[in-house]
Image (tube, rainbow, N blue to C red):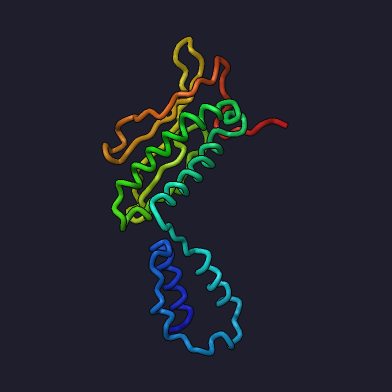
Length: 197
């Protein structure tokens, strides 16, 4: 089997299994003097790709921590530099702990052989839509948990940010409240807007 094909298979299998399976048997019959032969640019590039794409998640706790780090960054970007500073205290104390409970519950319910397939969907929410981010099963390509924020204006009460989530369990029908954070009487800036310098 040609070397480029072996290396391509290694990369493909590593990507599909998040590095949980390393196909050493594909590399076992490589010649011993491979380290002495000069490497071409393309083979060096392949080696780099292999090491960069191997991602392993050792435990459910580590996965929860990784998902929460990404959740916090994505939500901050969604809200923007003009909204986040004003509601940050309430966001940190009310929204993040509830997000963590929901994500933790989802990960704990997944079977041990499948939880490492949970990732944040690459299609994150931008603009004034409700979507912040979705968690999907990378194997099935289906969303399993959706986190949203909606800007509400109850009559005579001012504006609030309504953080909520939907789950695959009920086909995303139920609106599960996380927290409602009061903004004030003035109209909030658009999501993702930056501070003016």
